Each structure stands twice: as structure tokens, then as C-alpha cells.
Amino acid sequence: MALALRLANSLENHPFVVRLCRHARVSEADTAAIRQAIQREAIVKSKRELVIEGYENRTLSIVSRGFAVRYKLLHNGKRQILRIVLPGDMIGLPSSFFERASYSVTSVTNMEVQCVSLRRLVALCHRRPNIAIAMLWLAAEEMASYADHVTEIGRRTPLERTAHFLLEFHARLRLVGCATEKRFEIPFSQEIIGDMLGLSAPHVNRMLRQLSTERLISIQRRFVTIEDPGGLQLLGQFQPNIVVPVPVAAGDCGATEP
Amino acid sequence: MALALRLANSLENHPFVVRLCRHARVSEADTAAIRQAIQREAIVKSKRELVIEGYENRTLSIVSRGFAVRYKLLHNGKRQILRIVLPGDMIGLPSSFFERASYSVTSVTNMEVQCVSLRRLVALCHRRPNIAIAMLWLAAEEMASYADHVTEIGRRTPLERTAHFLLEFHARLRLVGCATEKRFEIPFSQEIIGDMLGLSAPHVNRMLRQLSTERLISIQRRFVTIEDPGGLQLLGQFQPNIVVPVPVAAGDCGATEP
DNA sequence: CGATAAATTGACATCACTCAACACCGGTGG
DNA sequence: CCACCGGTGTTGAGTGATGTCAATTTATCG
Image (cartoon, rainbow over all chains, first blue to last red; front, side, top):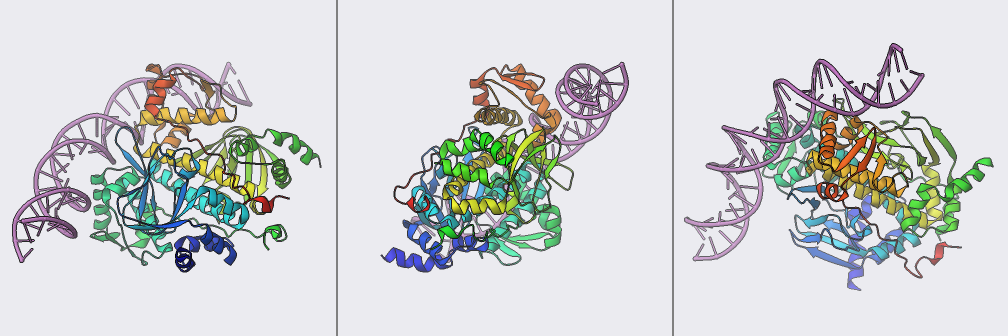
């Protein structure tokens, strides 16, 4: 099929596969199995709802291009953004594991995604424990990221939050090749940053301006340049979490490989 | 060994196994494999550090009795509690997946735990994909819980937060048989609730008192009675996340079972 | 029964939200 | 090419909520 052929090429350096391989032992056969599991590819325009709170969702999508936000709306009209979804991330994790999605996902730029049903993914994990384990590693990364987010919102000052956010977002962008060493684009509004950090949009603006006047960053349009990495780091207290490689237990895992 | 024998009994209705079985297809052989993987059992006194931020940790512990808190300390001396660890939860998830733990875990009551090294757990997941998949389900539950936590802290008022916290904690306690329909004990101080919700201890106290005067709850010592479940629910907007059972893909998973 | 920890209460200052006005930019259609 | 327009960024003023600090009471544990 044409799809399979295109995927064969695009998956080689798909940001998702790159991420998996960074710490897990993912073989050729494993990536081939992933490729085979993918059911369709989709182009998504900006500002489309990919997952809607309260509705059933049994599909996972891996993002190859573009950005989205995962968020929850409250009865009082406020919105909390839970995560900014980058290339290499999965949409529908964890919503597809629940009866009904407990949050929504909306694209903030045009996107390209590859879709797998939960059913197929589970079957894949059955056949290839390597992939299940790699997914556990992804889950661990994501949990650590959430933990940071809670700390950020719960106990940091707005200025620290903003600094931390910039550093974390920059680090995540770099991992998937969407940023240079000191420069990156924020492809969404300050209101979204506010809903991410539990701040009002005007306050985010004040904080960004303050970081600018203190010569830690500079901003033109939506491009951010980190002028003083040390200072920003000191303020934001961002520490990247370094995952360990999946341990190889010799002799324990021979059964499942041909 | 004596250990194996005791575990054989205690694991039957170990809250962890109960949780796994609630949604995943975990066979007799699977629980037997879990039992075998467990390396030692430990009794831990209250106020002991189980995981220390910045240090390596390659051990996972499943809790069979008692409570702990997972938290992060900031340079400004503030503390954010990330999660209250109950019976059936795992300690060392996700810290054991990282070079160095990015948070600490301390017991708040006496505890009883069973320990497995990460290496053994991974080997177990290799041999028994069912268990890997069940762990993915646990990870999804935990992610949803974190997402709620972020929303709680980021966009809810302190009164709503407190109500939500009580409902969520109560629901989690009930699942492991540590609470009745309307009554439960909070086995830690209001300061800890504050560090969980991003509030100061005095303010937590004010909020609890307000919930009392509004006849939503009543408190004696550390025992909470939910007097008006409907009202509290309306205020706290707590909605339990119902996980779907692991889909069974017939014919896809035969390869790994003997 | 004493000592220590936790809960409770009050006064006060400050920070961040709200609201509102305005500037800026990019896009769109005439 | 220009004028309009919606979305976004920027700034200011005012206010209420929540943290801080401190004192006091109550509970818990040796």
C-alpha cells in the first residue's frame, strides 16, 4: 500500500521513534511492528478539536508535526492547560484508557499525526514486550513532567514559573529538533501560557517583560532568545530529568525474541 | 523460603494485585510471577525517608499498609506534595526510571512494603506482557490523577480545592477499603494538606472550617464525615475517572502464554 | 503530668486578578 | 494598494483574596 510505503520512510526518523530509541532497546523488528500497527495518517488544521472532554476516545495519535494543547475546562469558565503537545508526543494518552475523556485536546497549529487504536496498541504490546516497556518509559517521563508542573503551579512565584516554563519548553523543543541552542518560537499566545501556569494573561505579559528588562531573555514577535542561560536557570530552577536506559536482564528476556 | 510462603498468602488480596486485576487480565501465573519477583518485605516506621531527592533509586516498593507522601523541596524552603501514597500504590514510580530521584518520599505512618528492583520488574514485564500492560494502565490512572492535581491547583479556588481534595482522597481510600461510605481518617496534618494544595496551613484550616459551617462536612480529630455528598460534589466538581478494561485482541496475544 | 506538635484565630500587608483602554500586527477584502 | 478588523500584546488603576506572622488553645505522646 502507498500508506505503508510512505510510513516506512517517514517512521525512520519520526520523532516518536527517536524518543523511544533514546532509552529503550527498540529493534528493527519493533519499529516495523509499529509501522504496521499504524492505521492511518491525518493532516489536522489549526484550532481543531482532537479529543473532546466527556466523549469516548479509543484512538491514540502520534504527532509528527505541529503543536496542540491538552486542557480541561471548569464550570466557572476557567481553563487549565495540562500539557503542550509536541512532535513525538502521543495524543489520547491517557484519555483512551478511560471510559470518557476527562479533558480536551485542540491543535494550535497545523499538524500531522499517525493514528492507532488502543486495541491494536495493546495487541502490539502483547507481541512485543519491548514496546510495552518503552511505553512505560514514556509514561515515566510524562509523570515526571506532570510532577514538575504541579510544583511549578503550587509553590513557585509567577516569575519563577515563567522562567521555568521557558526553560522546560525550550528543552523539549530541542529534543525534537525544533529549537536552536538559545532560540525558539512559542507558537501560541500568552493567554495559553497563562492557562498553563495558572496566571492571568496580563500577568504573564508582565513577567515576560520583567525577564526581558532583567536581560535574561529577549523577545521579538513570538521568538524567544535566552540571553543569560545561567541567570534564567538560577531563577527557574529547571532540572532536566535524565532517564536511565532500560536495564537488560541477560537471560531473563530471551523468550520473546526470535 | 519463609518469605515466599508468607507472600503467597499476603499477595492474594494485596491491594496492589487487587488494583491490577480490577481492569487488566492478570492470570494466576502472572500473580505467581509477581510473587516470585519480590525480593524482600520491609516494615517502615513513620517519618522515614524512603526516597531522597538527588540520589539514585533503583528499587520499587509496593505498599501493603500505611501512608507516605511524595514531595519536592524548593530552594526557597517551600514544599510541594505531589502525591499521597496509599496502600496499593508504588513507591519509586517514576523515580527509579531516572538517574537521580527528582523528589523525596517520606512515610507519614508506619508502613509495610514489598520491594522489587527495577531490573527484575523489567525482566518480569518481558516475560509477562500482561503485567507490562497492567502497569501501563496504572500509569494512565496516575497520569489522570496528576492532571486533576494540576487543574486543582492551577484554576480552582481554595474552597473548591479543599472540597475536591477531600472527595478524591476519600474515593482513593474507599478503593482500598480504608474508608466507609461517608467517613474516613486523614492520617496527617493540615500543613500537609496545604503543601498538597498549594495553600498555607492557616488557610486550609479556614477552608475546612468553612466547609463545616456550611454543613458539607464535619470534623472530629482527624476523622472527616461527609454530611452533604451532593453539595460537596457540586462544589468540588470531582469526577472519578473510570478506566476501561484492557481490550482483549483475540488471536494476537497467544504467542506469549505457555 | 509535662512537653511538644497541631489546630485555630486574628491583624495586616501584598501580590496577582479583574477590568478596561489602547497599541500593534497580520490578514482580508474592496 | 489601502482600509478595516480581529486577535494579540501592553499598560494602568483598583481591589479582594491569601500569605505571613504571631498568639492562643487544644490535642497527643512520652
